[in-house]
Length: 146
Image 1 (tube, one colour):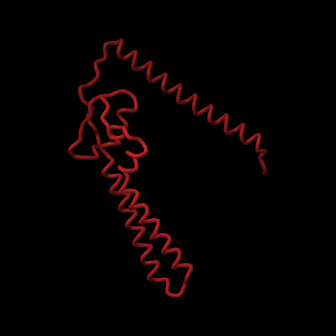
Image 2 (image 1 turned 90 degrees about the vertical axis):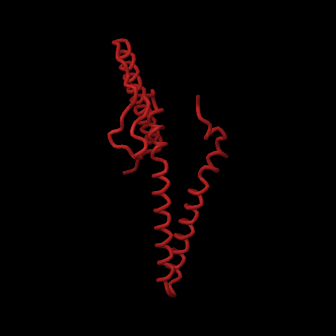
Image 3 (image 1 turned 120 degrees about the vertical axis):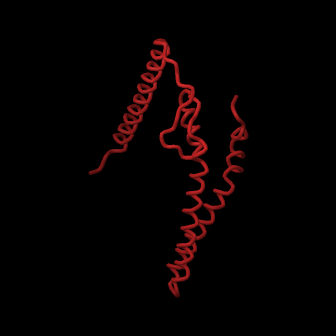
């Protein structure tokens, strides 16, 4: 079945409008719940205790509004994410090396192993230089907000 490009663009626009309206609706509901809780005399807790802490040293966060809480949790998981990515890159480098060793006279298998090894090393390089890349793209990336 062939879909006309005009209809495909229209469906894409409708889907994006629908997703945007859902985000706005949930944001409005969240804001109205927050305002009604504040007007009802709700006092937020002093610290939010994590049910499943990623880092044993970080078991609670100070309460904050909006996406700031997600960013705080992501910053706590950042070392784990980097370690996992580096482990996967090393695993791919090992697979590429084994593929090269087992290729024999098969040039297709050898080139696939070399490409896998090259991309694994490129990934390790990007992981190693992540803070330099991020600070080059956005100089205020590592500046704490007041």
